[in-house]
Length: 539
Image 1: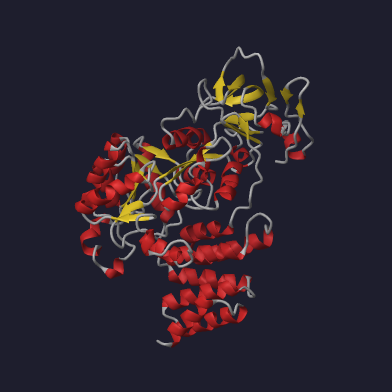
Image 2: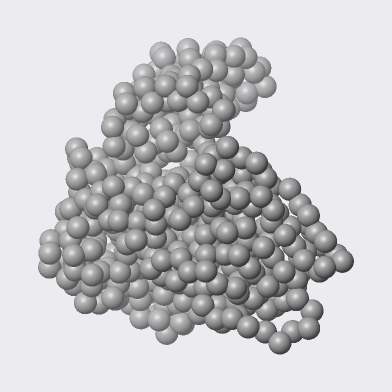
């Protein structure tokens, strides 16, 4: 929604005044207008009038006060700024319990994007510590998203996600692949290494600890297998010892899980959070155990992790969610992808049949409170932080209203944003997971033809999607995406370079050479292509 500013200093009042808008007029709701900068940054007392406030089950007309960034029902302050919310529906901001953004030089742009979508609270369960240290001060300001960071996760030598960072290092200027150990991940193979590296892990001031289990039932067979590089996790026998150390340090533990055995090992070890739904079927006993222990499960149905051998991932998620919800297990929303947490909530609802009255509290209450358990957030009652969103329709009746946020307040500050376009790359990845590569390519072409201004269709989008598939050993899918990128951007040197790399990984030497040659023709300064061509021709 477009918004304009008005501040009347004579009456000491900030107003949101209706402006003609056909869609909103039809709904009988006035368009909300923003505060001017002098009012937006007020640190004193604000009287919040003409709003319908979410109480956990419905919306109630109330007048509230923001007193130094905290909600109150009344105040005896002499100087009060009045803010008219224009009859809008007021609810707490969203939380995303699994996202790997907001941890590098792109923080400012990502912050703008998250705030625009109403996401104020984020947990990042794996980040590069040096980069994270540089943005931590930004991540808890009144005008920015609040983020908790795990820093590098704990895995085994050659374990997940080492293979991802190996590839990232190829394009990094400030890290080699070897230097990422101790920054992006910690390789721990036995208890002596845990003892040795634990002080360094704590010195990085993680907000919680992330541990990787990856088909732990096969750990003994895969731990020394070169073919299993990047396809294994930490020795499951170490997990209880890690949990014990973390809890002694006052830190929670989140476990990456893939298999049903991973799920069970994590529960038995006493982890606080399962960072994903498993990609295999659970039993009722598994769900009951998770509920009994109070372990939190992050949904991540939109995760970009492919699931080799699973024909219908939606069916697996549908069954597992039904069991967990039926057992009253604790679930929170997280994406582990570039999709929004609102999309995650909608996907969970579609899989389970949950009504908006059931999933909205998870989005705005349970998830934020899990990310920041010691903060008064996720509610609009007295004593809670004055952070909230305003929408122009009742989201319990019109959940689509959550996509069209009219105003955002954080700790009493009005937040103005210019949202960026969503990336088509994540749409492509998600469609591959649920509809195959043919379906993803068809959807890309349809959206590019029918909604060219609705998404970021830049060259980098398909390129990033292709590399995600390579990281997960989905080489055929990566080739198809890089071929599509060549079709869309035939004059870009980088698209041929990427396609050449995928062909090289697939063992198609002739095709790899052809594409590296084309990349070099378009960009004679591509030294990487020169090196790859020398290697390929020497085979």
